[in-house]
Amino acid sequence: MKVVFFALLFVTLLASDSLVQERLAELPVSEQHEPEEDIFDYCYNSIVEFLRPLGTCERSRTLYKQCDSAWANKVIHDKTICQVGCLMSSVSMALRSRGKTISGATANPDTLNSWLKTHGGYSGNLFVWGSVAPLGLKYSGKTRSQKTVQECLCNSGCEAILNVNNGGHWVLATGYDGSGYTVNDPGYSRTKYDYSGVGDVAIFYA
Image (cartoon, helix red, strand yellow):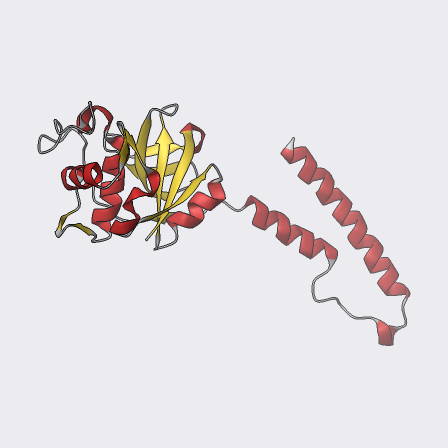
């Protein structure tokens, strides 16, 4: 359908450009001039820009695994980091990558978990979104806008944490390309998720 639309638009532009040239030829020679960019050029350039492949952004981020033996069995509320700590582990990766410390210690799933438990960071086993603001990462909200997430990933002061696997898992985004987001996945060995496989995206600013 898109191909047919652009084909019809292209033919229309050709016809429009011919009419413009005919009208121009009717003017006295002294009044004839070439426009800086005629309608054909303008629309053609707009189409080219619209069809241009998506760019890319990529940055390096610390990778932590929620089932690392150093903290896998640490309890959040009544479940362990290995069982349900994907979101918190993703947040700890963002903190560590930005050089943030937690009470003077390196940010990781263990130190972040301990801090959250004493600073209102959990409701049961669920992470409280705004709780890490004192650590230098302010929660902005959730979005499903691909453009918003891409802008975040090209912004040095922004972090995006993706909800994947039909809502059952969270991963830290590290970049994007034409087909999906590259990630640090705390629970699996995957390094990329297609755009269609991503639900809500939590946005944080440092």
